[in-house]
Image (tube, rainbow, N blue to C red; front, side, top):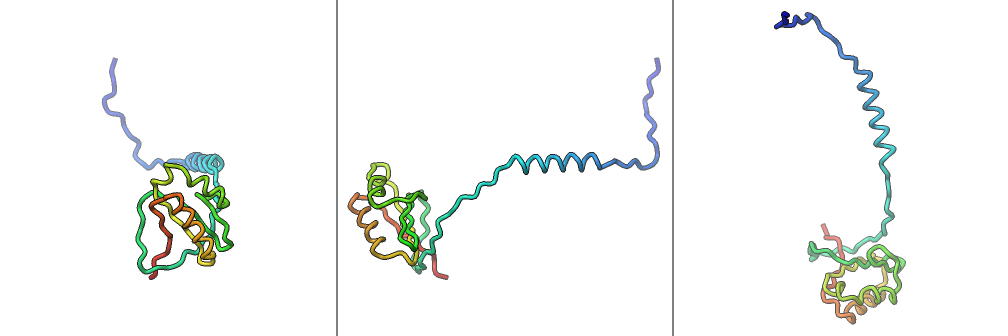
Length: 134
């Protein structure tokens, strides 16, 4: 039995048909588009006041947000002052920093009420969010 050692190649260009490749890529694209879910989270619109002496905080904070209409949120959930007091009166919260994000149009009275509530609960680290003035 004799084996051929060298296969002879045809001289000339062979073209690869790319139509099946395009079909497969198109089907993969449709599959990933249909299987992915797009969820949009609604945010709380707050325009922070500007400050010259603001610092960047790098720690994980609990966030209290006060909108221009004086609606209070605790970590994105609407809360009354009574509910806020219950949520903040836990030992694990008292040790972590608290960030108050108040809209420019929020009343100072509401901000002071929340500040006093936090101080009465003996929360040590209370910060107010601002934008740096440019």
